[in-house]
Amino acid sequence: MLSRLKRKGEASVAPSVPAWHPNFRNYEKLPDIKAVRTAFFVNGVAILLAISLTIYFGFTEWELRNINHQTAAIQGEIERDKKTSEQAITLFKTFQADEARVLEVDTFIKSKPTISVIISRLGETLPANIAVDNLDFRETGLTMRLSVRGTPDVASGYATKYLEQLRSDSQLALFDDFTFTSTPSPNPTTGRMAVEFFLHLKGAPAGRK
Image 1 (spheres, rainbow, N blue to C red):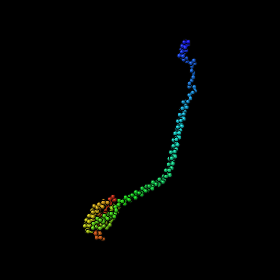
Image 2: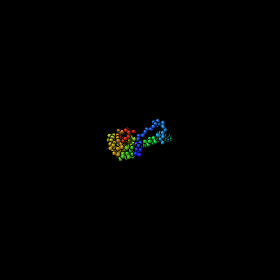
Image 3: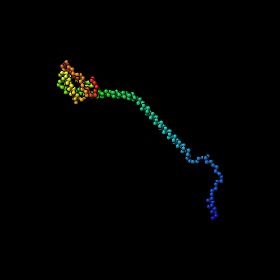
Image 4: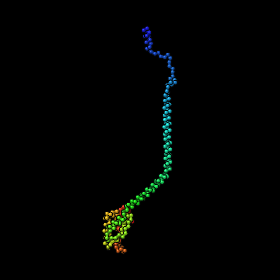
C-alpha cells in the first residue's frame, strides 16, 4: 500500500511530457476571436472626427454667409442714405460759414466803442476857446475838425495843449495814437483857426481812412 502511494506522489511531481506531435498552427492566418476588434475603435474615432470637422466647417460657412448678408444690408442702407448725408454735410458747412460771418460782425460791433460815450466825454473836456465843427468816426479811428480862437500862434498852442489833454485822458484809452492831420489855418467863414486831429483806435489797421 505504501509503495503505491509513494509511486502516485512521485508520478504527480514528474515533469510534464511535451506533446507527442509538433504545433503547425499559423496564428496570423487564424480568425480574430476578440469580442470587440481594434479596427472598430479606429474607424469610430475617424468617423467622429470627420463628423466634427463637417459640423465645424458647416457652422463657419453659415456664420460667414450671415455676416456677408448683414454687410450687404448695411451697405445698402449706406448707399440709400448717402445722398441725404452729403446734403446734410453741405448744409452744415454753409451754416459754419454763416456762423463765422455772424460772429465776425458781432465781434466787430462789440469791439467798437460807444459813440455817445465818446461824444459825451469830448463835450465834458472841451476847452472854452475850442469848438468842435465835425466828428468823423471810421473803422480806424476818429477825425476831429475844430475851430480855435486866437492868432495862428496862440491857436496852435491851444490845439497842442488840447491834444495832450486828450492823450492823457484815461476814458479815451481805447485810442492809442493822437496826431495832428493838418496845420492850423484860418477859416474865413468863422474867423477862427481850423485844426484837425486824428485819434487812432487800438487794434485797428494803421493809417487814416
